[in-house]
Amino acid sequence: MSELERWYSIASEIEALISMVEAEIGAKNFSGTSSRHSLSKIDKKLYEALEIANKAAEALSED
Image (tube, rainbow, N blue to C red; front, side, top):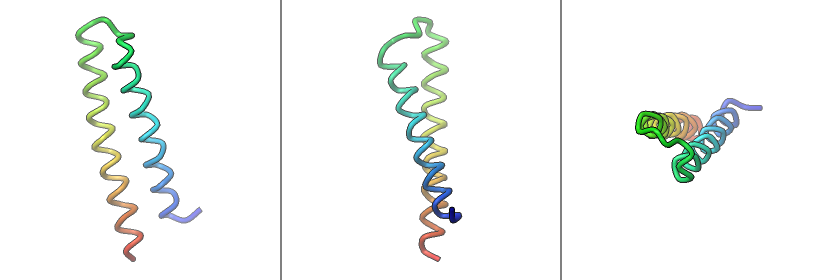
């Protein structure tokens, strides 16, 4: 697997995690405000990680 493929794989895994966190937020399985706030913070950080992974893949694809 090439380095570019690895970054795409990482991005894909991050997207799956985002979907899981957003499903938990949407299902309201966590009733405590603290838990919901924590999930929202995790979601935000995952989106930041996804952006970084996509930028790394983009940089490699330009080479």
